[in-house]
Image (cartoon, rainbow, N blue to C red; front, side):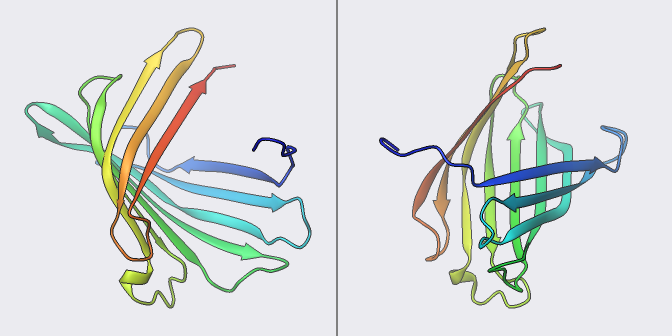
Length: 172
């Protein structure tokens, strides 16, 4: 990005509604919703919505496992929008070794048109190992990280990709 100016592209508003109290039932369930309003009138706006689920079950050598599943649907509206509804699937399973080190694996899938998905080989599907962790700097916040390598499973997906996320949360 050397020499490029910073530009404003869009504003996003997102939220989730927790449907079950954390840890009370077999799983924690929520609904996710997001709206993206683009800065350019010619660009389509988008809505993303769908269920989020998380549960803790199964043990490996006495260590618990956490499983998360997100099924998110995307629709565009306005200028240059499409009639297609996209489905993005994310699944992560990890061992709860300790808060700083939690190894696991994850899967991501993308179907561009759920009513006419086409051949599985033309869809994007990735799977691979991940390392997740959290370090608390209480009362100054906490640092979360996720680092993984994803292998492409179809011809429509790149052969491999590094996925990472770093987040520093500060309570107000």
